[in-house]
Length: 113
Length: 116
Image (cartoon, rainbow over all chains, first blue to last red; front, side):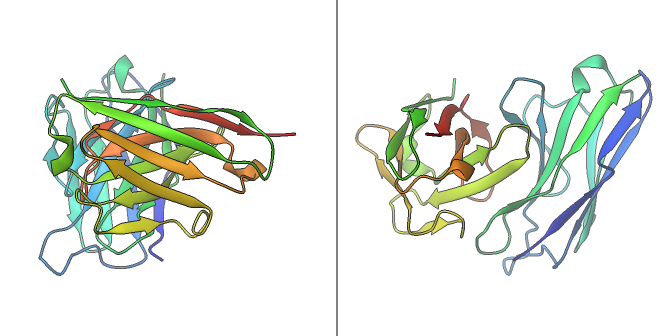
């Protein structure tokens, strides 16, 4: 099974600052069709997860450009610039490249100073 | 507006069964693969099961294989999760989510508590 290792476990960022979250996979996430199905989600307190970034670097509808994704193969990064209060919550990466189980990272909790 | 509304959760004794439903609206349900994902109290997300748009492909997490059954009724725009032989470790908030390669819409979740 593919294991996604997310770091750090938690982040304390000042308003207006920048956050960076890493997601490393135990296997390459390049699908046989050439796509890389690595996505990022944010779960705000008391809410369902919401899609932020799909296929490494594509912002989902309505997601501000403060959020950006990058990476390839086994190493991926989510960056949040100009952190705002509504960015707090737990961030998860998810891989949908390899056959089940479809795996989530363990999560990174973002707190605002 | 895309909406997914789960129901059917509750308190159930170990070893018993429960069936969750997820009613979809705002999109053509029969065109999308669907998933169940769960979150134990205070824990992270765990993918549970997937069913393709026409029910041809069905996958389960090892933790529920043989005990849970995912199904759908495209005429009723409804996704199901039949859970049997429930264990305390199945206690979680169960979300349905739309999508095959990308889960782009999630419901609010149905709470399942397995306890005697």
